[in-house]
Amino acid sequence: MVLAANPRASLEDQHFQVVVIGGGINGVAVARQCARAGKHTLLVEQNDFASGVTSRSTRIIHGGLRYLEHAEFGLVRESLRERGRLLRERSHLVHPMHFVLALNETSQRSALKVRAGLWLYQRMAGKMPNADPTEMELKRLERALDAGHRWSFFNYEDAQCEFPERLVAEWLIEAVEAGAIVRNHMEALAVDVSHGRTRGVLLRDQITGRDQRVDAAWVINCSGPWADRVCQRSSLRMAKPMLGGVRGSHIVLPRFSGSPSTAIYAEAVDGRPIFILPWNDQLLVGTTEVADNGDPSKTAPSAEEIAYLVRSVAQLFPKAKISAQSVKHAFAGIRPLPYSPGNRPSAITRRHILHDHADDGAVHLLSVIGGKLTTAASLARDCARKMGLSAAEPTTIAVGPERALDPLLDDAVLEISRIGAVSEESARGMLEWHGKRAADIARMALVSAELRAPICPHTSHVIAEVVEAYRRECAVTLGDVLLRRVPVALGACWSESCSREAALRIGAVLGWDDHTMGANLESFEMERSAFLRPVVRATEAFEAAAD
Image (cartoon, rainbow, N blue to C red; front, side, top):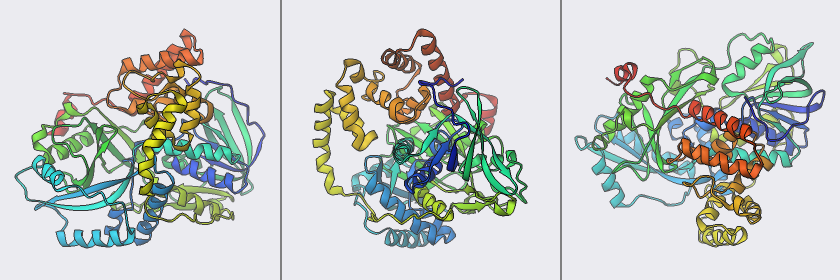
């Protein structure tokens, strides 16, 4: 059940020059690009923006070091260029991160090839902020790793976006400001194709349950792992599938004694590369690669995948005594990779592909296959050009943010604190998640003590940020807010008592009655547990997988 904060106007019989199906990072980027090009654009998402693959990623904005192994130099250059733009333009959300590639004498990769690859990668990347770990940090890491091996460490720089959901929220606001109409919880039932041409889209509003139809000159299918299903529902005859879904699962661990303070790129128990990343005061470990062409809405990490990730961390850090009981939760998503039967998942390109359906009997229908967080804006420009729109490359091409601005951060925190009469910790949180819009939120917080109150006792983020999510960031449900717009419910301390306290505080400001409060809370808990899967401990299946 979807609970709407406010009724939404019907879209029935409206005409749009562009309809974008799918509100992940790619779909939002495409909608923003088309709206900025002056096209009357509609963006629809069956659940919430960034609630699918985007929120189930490893949350790295990387230049594609792994792609060098497959000689995808063009993709590496594109990724490095886009990484640099995000570091500069979204420096409050995208941060430089130091990575240590840790290999031992059993590694399948030779030290010579690794050094050569890193040298080439760094030459292609250009100058990045220097954040090399100290000798003390490396010694600490070496002590924590398995002492039965000889370790070699290789340093390189990349970037992290802890909350890509926030990046999507900012692009969403910019799309709306450019004139786009956006609807989450709006399912695209089918593309209306008549006489070989795209005519419109049939929609179902998940809030009202009503079906609607809109006219469309162009339809862009950015539905990720649902892309083939959209075409099937639209009765398109395809010679072969566009997608070969690959499930990627992650586990989240609490920090342990000796846990790395820098990002670790290492080899799992089978030699595959995995990441162990400091994330949100926890550790994020992933990912797996398992073929999965099932229903993307029902995907979940298997017991075998969880056991594989647990064993891999335990093998690297035996002193930490990591076990299944250590896992806080796990999550999984389907990577919408191109259909490549017979190829290993790691060998399938991560470059995006634009499938033109003109030959399938649907002129002006494009499907987006693949893509990743780092290159979403580049994908959007390619899509616009495919439609005949002007899409110039941005002029800001520097590879790193202006680090000289860092000393001004404390001044900005003090200013936001003064504007909103909030603590410096709350002001810093606003700046980190909302950037230049933090001042507007602070002014809202000044209106009342209820708006300045923390969302729950464990966070410095305040109710005013929640109100902003409902008011300007297209949030509809409590899950839209607490898992994506103001994602405090991803935090290490969040519990059911936090959910209840947050619902009470938010409901008091928004005027919810007891029924609305209970329904919102129940819906939120169901969504959170479906996303952040609690690991079933001591089951026969899990123990068998762990052996």
